[in-house]
Length: 172
Image (cartoon, rainbow, N blue to C red; front, side, top):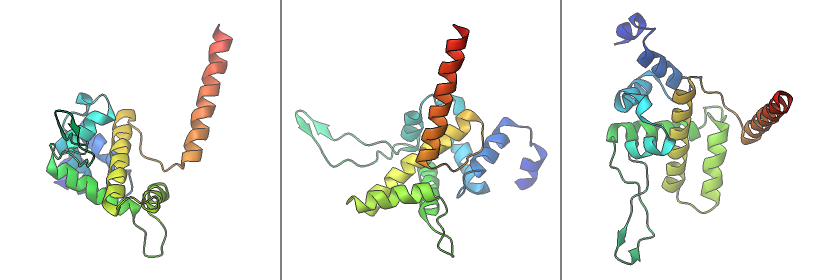
């Protein structure tokens, strides 16, 4: 299998597998499995469509006037992809043998959810949601994943917006 990948490096599919491998915690088999389950990524315009395809979206519990409050994931999508997302989420919130978080941003997010009183599996579901966002962003932008703290992300976003406003004001 690895021989086929090395032989077809220019293929768009292989490029997407390599992009997914840039996310720490996603190995070759996980990336390949996800891409095989996703198929043509161009079918997804929004991250919510990818969540639904994986079966990570909340199920609706309604009947007449009754609206249920206990929501679970719908599990209507690919169970293989859902398992891969779960294992990647577990990997990303973990630490190395020396105690260093593998992904400090997602670990902090997970611990914050746990400290807020959420059960561990609910917090892990929220991390899985974030992992789907990461996968969607990496495949949409065709750029490898780089860990950014929320403050770094906010700073780069604001600086981009300010430069766009300056560019628009000089054009007008």
